[in-house]
Amino acid sequence: MATTEDSGMKATPAQGSVVRQTELIVSGVLRGGVVVSAAVILLGIADFYIRRLTGQLSSGFSQLHSLSGVWSALLQGQPLAIVALGLVILLATPVLRVAISILAFAVERDRAYVLITLLVLIILLFSIFVVGSGSQATLYNLHNSSLLFFFEMLLSSVAAGLIGALVGLGGGVFIVPILTLIFHVPFGIAIGASIVSVIATSSGAAAAYVRDHMTNLRVGMFLEIATTLGAICGALLSAVLNASVLFIVFGVVLMISALPLVAKLGEELPQGVKDDRFAQRLRLASTYPDHRMHREVPYQVSHVPAGFGMMYVAGLISGLLGIGSGTFKVLAMDTAMRLPMKVSTTTSNFMIGVTAAASAGIYFQRGDIDPLIAAPVALGVLIGATVGAVTLTGLSNVWVKRIFVPIIVLVALNMLLRGLGLLG
Image 1: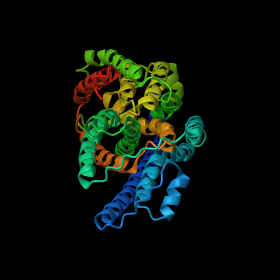
Image 2: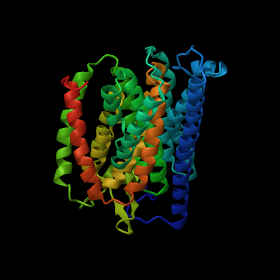
Image 3: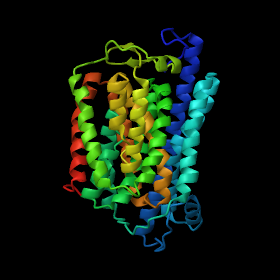
Image 4: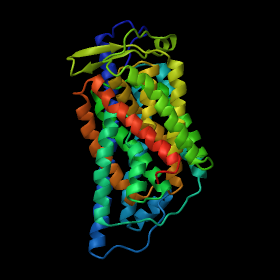
């Protein structure tokens, strides 16, 4: 995170202290949201299965697709309402993080980023309370409540969260195929659970990445303007566009976008990168601690407009397909803006939660977030993301790329096959 007007100047100890305080505040908000939401979800799940095993579970079920519906079900003592409340807290965590970031940048006396972050918050609130409130609920009757079903989804989600945290994808690209192909979950509910998984991965991993100074907060906050706008447009278009065409287009774009990354597969750090005028004005250059290299690594940022445009497309894809589009975000930062791979993946993790939150309100109020599906997904990816965040710090940028490239190819093939009707 840059700390001076001129990216070439070093931060004073006082400036560095204030920036560090900002990072710790943001990390604390993410960590707190994750802990509280997980605790509430576990409480609701425990209550549900205890009642089910003892025969005390009510046969009635409220459609938990609005805050008023969740509150009404809570007053009725429904255990799934407790689970839904935990999911709402998780979905609200990225929004709270953005709000707190405004105060943190104000402490830094950084007016430009106060305004940038305020704009992101306004877009998020508009999506939730204006766009989302007009959504029509699609009611499903899928409630496989067996304990085996719960644990199978939990374990699958741990693997998705682990990989998502390592390469900045969010896990959503794996959740949708797992739920639809293995567990035969309706596509709408699978996307709703995927949105939850993206936010869970982001919140769980980003808390550690921000704390460890791996994430570039300024890059993330600036690019979130584009991703949130794209996510809103994508969520609205998802109701009218042919998903098959979208899968094919996304698969082709990913394949083409991966080529520059393959060409630089052995590159540990980008070479010859100079701040463009946008990076200088926005103070995007920064450093990150590389534990493997045992030193603080400085880096600069280029082609900011190209990265901003690619982030809008990433947000659009996220809203359309519910996958977080972390692949496209990482590609934009690594190949266009030329950030180090570790910074690209950690900043992508930081951003994907806000991108998903921009469309989460729409999916929630459509009834696409089923507590019995989303709960094990959320808990599983939180566990996986936490393990992945610890693992990443010990890997080299080259190894992160070696993990990332095959996954991009698999994701692209998955999208192409789904678009052609050969999967699910």
